[in-house]
Image (tube, rainbow, N blue to C red; front, side, top):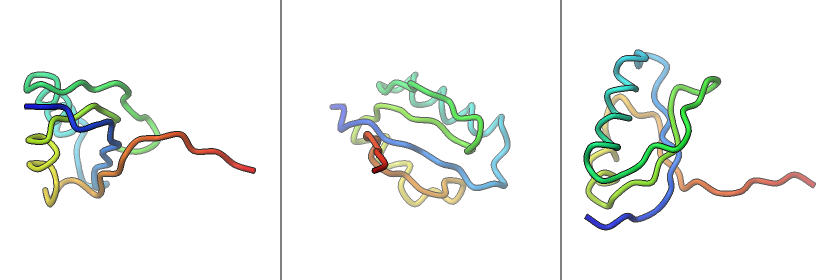
Length: 74
């Protein structure tokens, strides 16, 4: 299970805090690492393995997954 990179995982507004925490635990317990939990958005940033990324993509409870990176303004 090789790490593929850092991602932002945002859940749909219908996701409960318990469901989001279960996903975060799953990441940590299966080879990834949750680095930040968000308070404004329902989600977290994490380093994911390729298996984790593949299993999360298309999951009904997840709104979107995007690569984590630096964002700047002018």
